[in-house]
Length: 323
Image 1 (tube, rainbow, N blue to C red):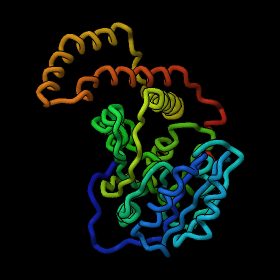
Image 2 (cartoon, one colour):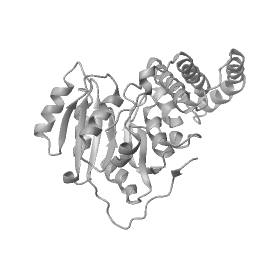
Image 3 (spheres, helix red, strand yellow):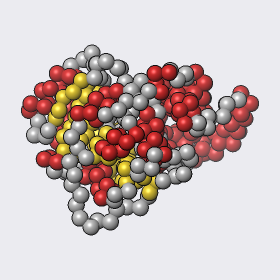
Image 4 (cartoon, helix red, strand yellow):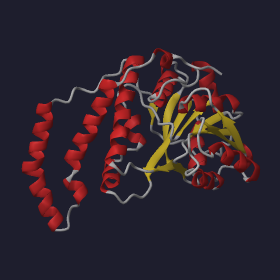
């Protein structure tokens, strides 16, 4: 059953519940200054929101920076620490347990929430049947052709995860959940290393706690991967996520990528697409990104398949934490 609700809420009045924003941080001292600037700029009333910044056993000055920010910032920052389990999901659970808000929102240290982010993310909860709200993730400006490729593909957009054929879900880079949902289905699986955002959204929908809605004006920006090494790591993680979700929920695995299929696609690219796009580039009607779409797509697909093939779900990753 797909319970994704794409309708926007009726603007019958402001809905301003107490909100807790949970942000797991691992070795984030470089990202923290920009992140804090974005949090201070939020238009949501400051007396209605607390920011729980959870250090996940960092080896840099992250925790010291968080503590300093809590003493000097005009917004309410609560420094927390999760040093027992090295996992963003365990860190989020630490934040959830400490949160006082009716709505718990999530983003990441390397994200840049835009000023209207939180206000737009909370507004759909005016509808009592909404348990989850996913905002949009857009790209920070990038110069490399890999970043331009990912931007063209809208790799980070929530529209991909919200269209999942099993159940829609939102990525924790931009997601809000009613507190009562955690009380009913449990928290994140703390030992899961990827796929936990889909898992929690699916558990909430499967238990009929409530539906999920998309808030396109609740925008956070995130940087695309700029090197092939970073791109490979990203897509291998997607593959591992698919394997874990297959083990936990029975979702379909990605079909095997054969040498025959890859050779056919590459040959078709060389014979048909390279000449066509080369002429367009000379005429100023295309770019190198257009020319390289097929080989980059093959690269990411193979990385994802390898990640899926090599992944193994540990037994403790099945465990669910509770409030």
